[in-house]
Image (tube, rainbow, N blue to C red; front, side, top):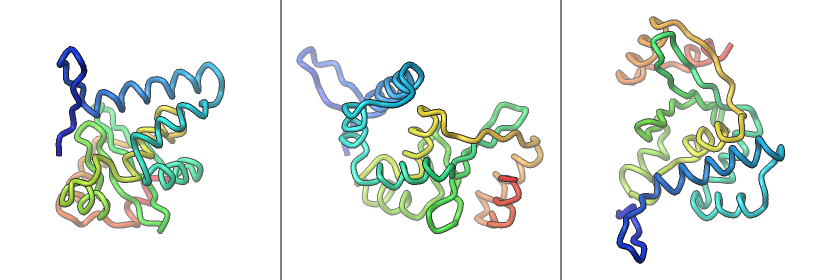
Length: 160
């Protein structure tokens, strides 16, 4: 899947750069006017397509928590509509949900699942809950995640 488009001057622009600029516009509009315009919403829809609606629902439900440790590392924990929580890493464009594995990794239909979109747009709108956790809690979380043993009870305790 090609993620660039060429302009008249042959300069390539990646989708990631387009998303970053769009999110900067969303953040600025929200800060200046308290809401975003219909045009910006249409731009979000054009870039993120169908998963945007589910992402906006997650934002409205305050389902996004940014877990940060003193070492400066972070991971987003997004409580999905089914009640299951997923881990999102924006720097590496990764989500632990099955949709990410299927639609983004295997089929290459999209760059983002609704959880990653919720994190990106939620941050731009200032609708993310920030929670500090210890370095050891963060290490344990990563260890469990990559061993595939992260439990819902452990995730819920991090949200309290």
